[in-house]
Amino acid sequence: MKTLWELYSAWFRMGMFTFGGGYAMLPMIQKEVIEKHHWATEDEIMDYYAIGQVTPGIIAVNTATFVGYDVAGIPGGIIATLGVISPSLVIIMIIAGLISNFSELAAVQHALKGIQVAVCVLMFTAVIGLYRKGVKNVPSFIIFAVAFVCSYFLNISTVLLVIIAGAAGYALSVMKQKKGGNNA
Amino acid sequence: MKTFLLMCLEFFKTGLFAVGGGLATIPFLKEISAKYGWYSLDMLTTMIAVSESTPGPIGVNMSTYVGFEMFGIPGGILATLSLVAPSVIIICAVAKALKQFKDNPIVQGVFSGLRPAVCGFILSAVVSIFLMALFHVDAFKASGAITDLFNWKAIILFAALYAFSQWQKKLHPIVIIIIAAAAGVVFGF
Image (cartoon, rainbow over all chains, first blue to last red):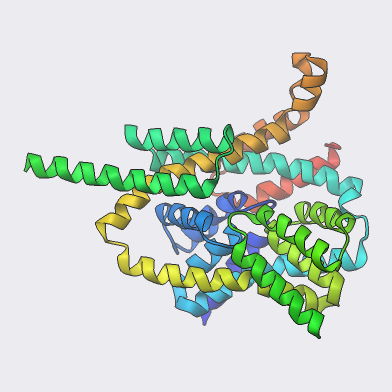
């Protein structure tokens, strides 16, 4: 019961302070899920993101369901998801019901521009950490660089890139095993 | 009642077929607007603007907004639950399978390729938001003057916040978000 409450409240906080899409949630996930509650490792979060890219639904929601399921089974998956969507439900309905020109208010626009800068700082720190942990040899650097160029400059579908990267990872691991077998 | 169920079904379909981020839901919402006329494209534009300027995943914000506009509070809640229901079912199934095959060498090989790729995708998102938040790319293109390229206020805030976050490493990201929002209002970003 305590775990379910912790899942709900942690994902509520993450939903409440994430502006934008699934990747912008990464710094919050690192703090709450990895450092504070030890519900997942950095590698596991990367795996969930990759799966979230090729499965239907919103990535932030998929990641919440994944972590929740891992911690407390199906109830955990449901509770974590409810946690991450709760702030949206409350905030959007208040704004839709009461403030007709919310996104045009000067204070809102100024605050959002400031928040964008904060997201830059947090994402910058997060991506450096991930790079140091995840890109350790030449093959993984090549996959990293190709994925970046293809998604940023060439706008190639992420689903396709995930499939190619997965196949490349598999091929590399088979080659490595063969090499290990020959040496032994 | 019939429209209410139809709305839930349409959001369930959106959740089932929109692969990727929250922005992937927008084409589906346009289609729903054209098919049923429940809301106009003008309203959809407002809803996108509000969803982008409030916390939370954009897709979740959008579904809450549309559902609320149609059927009040029950509409907002049910539209969002319908949107996330397919994810919850699919991801629970995938998570269960992954738990069983986690130590399988094939699965491990596949993920060893996926992790650096995800790092690349995230870098691509970081570059996009850097260009949007710290530079005036459009003003630079219009005038050609290199001094127009930099959003100095934002760059100074970036440097200050980065130094602060490196000094106070235990700080919760929420604190950085709140400081930056306050700075944005106070200095008129």
